[in-house]
Image (cartoon, rainbow, N blue to C red; front, side, top):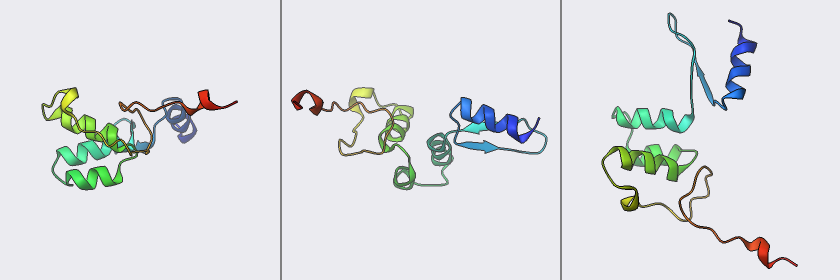
Length: 98
C-alpha cells in the first residue's frame, strides 16, 4: 500500500490525520475526535480540549452527551464561529439584500 493511495483515501474520507503504526493497519481520525479521546483518557482537561478544538461546540456536545446529559441540557456557545455543525439558530441576512 503506497503513500499516494493512503493520501487519496484521506481526501475521499475528509480525514485530517493519518496514523501509521508498525503491525497495525493505517487509520484516520479527525482532530476533534482525537482531542475527545485524549480528554476521555484523562491526559488533558476539558478546557484544554475545547481551547484546541476545530469546532468547540461539536466537541462540547460530544463530551457532555457522553457524560449522560440530554441534548437539551447541553450549553453551547452562541458566539462560537469555529465551524462545524451548529445547533444554534442564525438569522439569514441575505433576505435583506436588494
